[in-house]
Length: 23
Image 1: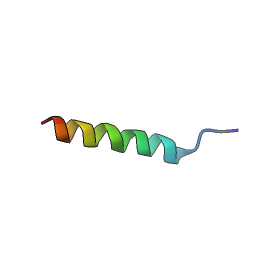
Image 2 (image 1 turned 90 degrees about the vertical axis):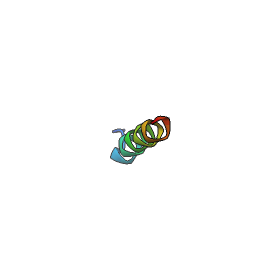
Image 3 (image 1 turned 180 degrees about the vertical axis):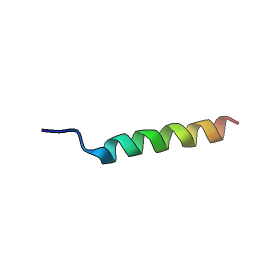
Image 4 (image 1 turned 30 degrees about the vertical axis):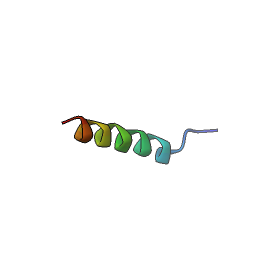
């Protein structure tokens, strides 16, 4: 079972969103 890229993308998106909200 390989990790789906969607999970990685979602995690990256979440991090970016959090960063934007923090600013």
